[in-house]
Length: 219
Image (cartoon, rainbow, N blue to C red; front, side, top):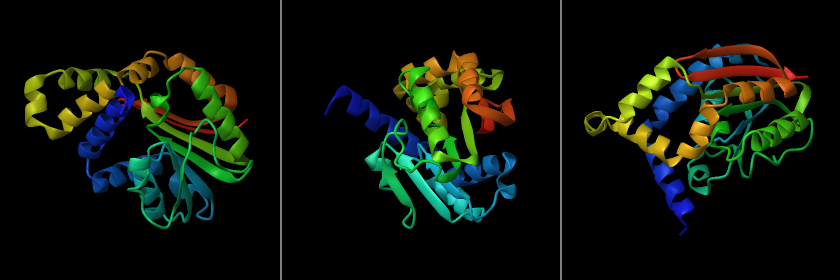
């Protein structure tokens, strides 16, 4: 097994410890509602990119959506996805969907794993434009360097806090496992927003509590 494989395994193990599926579903549901999901047509075709273990799909199903698919690069996490959804083992820089076939594409915490900015981000966004129908929407929730997130980072550096908090310890391991891409993402907010807004028209944007929450329509 390569060093990269070991790092990936460690990150995935920390991710699975960070919160229970129920906690993650509740978090995703709250985000989707804030971003307007209750107003989306329930017959919409929706794909979750970087879907992980599928709790974003579960959150969408709980809101009444049924035409759901997921995409992720991790076979281990895809194996945990719920039955009944089509989950694809694929790279989000080359989506396994026909052109103009989806109404919504959703990313909750995947873009900051991309190795090369802006090139990889641009490839994902170009693919999103291709796959979305003319009135389609891209929904993005990603970490963002706010004062709150800086405070969280400081907490993750405290050994005593990691010893008493399983959640902090798991988060610290996740940050360490993805440090190069994570820090690359956080230090280039203007580049990220320019890339999003070059490909989509911003409809909703919230920044706070360490997150960017954004919805864009096709240009």
